[in-house]
Structure formats: C-alpha cells, structure tokens
Length: 94
Image (cartoon, rainbow, N blue to C red; front, side):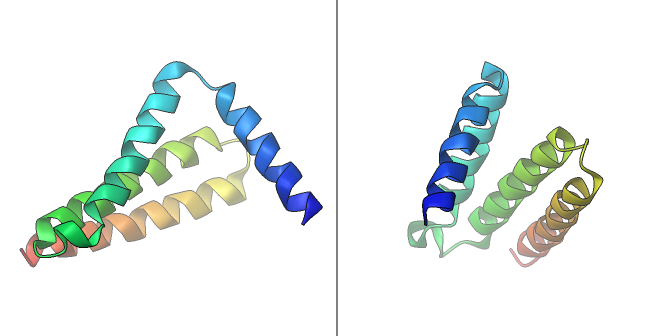
C-alpha cells in the first residue's frame, strides 16, 4: 500500500509539471466522459457516443505524450481505437 501512495503522489507531481493547455485539455476530456456517461444522460445514446469520443481523445493525447515508451503508447492507441469504434457504434444506433 505504501508503494501505491508513492506512485500516486509522483503521478500527480508529474501532471503538475505539464503545460497549462495539456492540463486543461485532459481535465476537460476526462470530465466530459464522466458527465456524459452518468445515468442522467443514459436515455440517449448520443451522449454515450460523446463520452466514448472524449475518452478516445484522452487516450490519443496520452498515447502521443508517452511516445518515448512504444509499448505504453501502443496500448493507449489501441484503447483509443476501441473507444472510437464504440463511439461510432453509439452514434449509429442513435
């Protein structure tokens, strides 16, 4: 448990070192995905698609940021691709 707390603190410190545009962009995409995936918006699949699209953008940006580590970057890009397919399916089913 001590190691997890240390990792979280170091990740937060690394996030604080990022440029302002990156912090704002990541925060907006994360909040968009959380808000539109909530049960309040569950009656319309359009909001579900928006949520999945925001998560895909989140993964694309972090995949680009982690470009120095190919394996992690490819995992982020694969997750982004999956989210894009799910977003597309949500938009089609609307």
